[in-house]
Image 1 (cartoon, rainbow, N blue to C red):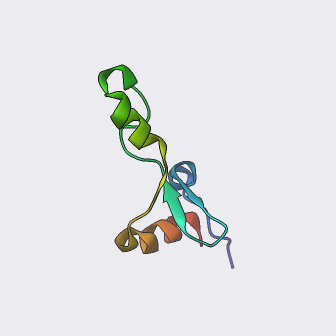
Image 2: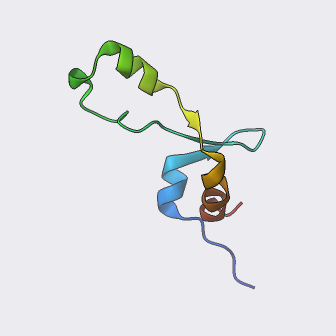
Length: 64
């Protein structure tokens, strides 16, 4: 039986915590920080959990 392949785009965007939850980076976190208020930039730093409705699809992409 062939091995499952991890989706290479998903493995760059999601990570799994020790307890099995899936984390993602917030949108608009990557660049153009000079256009955002410092308050908004600070808020975007923290990673968040993937929404429960998306967890099944993300796990499938990650091969979990």
